[in-house]
Image (cartoon, rainbow, N blue to C red; front, side):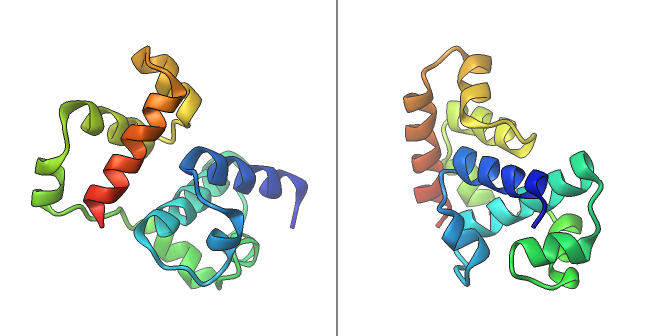
Length: 126
């Protein structure tokens, strides 16, 4: 795997608070899939890497990488309704690709607080 792809994958794992082993492994939980989706989108947008190369980086084939790129996560109306206003703000920034530190700076809160909101969002989305 290219050094830049490796660093991008590490960054996604860090900001999403998910283990690298899960992202490249067989785990299929929603947060893991969303981390993969973010990695694929950022790799295409920032590095202009092909789908086969991206797929190999996360131990998937190119069709999976393409599917992750073209689809958006589906949140049920009941799930978004259950989120607080701050959780919705954080979720919107996460969808824009903001990491924990950038979200904290943008909302003028601590990174630990952002982490708590992220865990709350995760719990409500499962």
